[in-house]
Image (cartoon, rainbow, N blue to C red):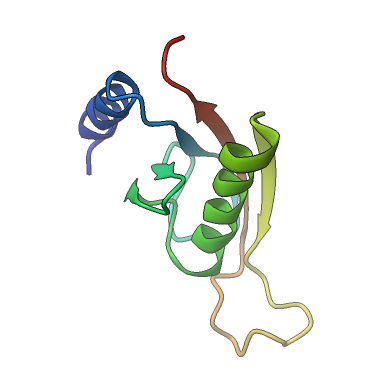
Length: 109
């Protein structure tokens, strides 16, 4: 999904009165599946568009978006560690780290 398509979807959700979160990678260090600027939209029902990389990193971003929508209603800066320093992830990691900005978007009042 291109950024233009994603922002059109965001505008449509807002116009329809559907709250969502815009999740954006603001920094990528080391080996990561997506780089800075990658975006994803997340709704409270877990529907999403776009991607910030899949796997455990995207799952963490999804959880942060749901927390933002359903509890805090405030933006959040999330650090996502895709390394396996302790050997607990079975080697199924990229090896880098991401900083992700999770921003709630609510319908106009």
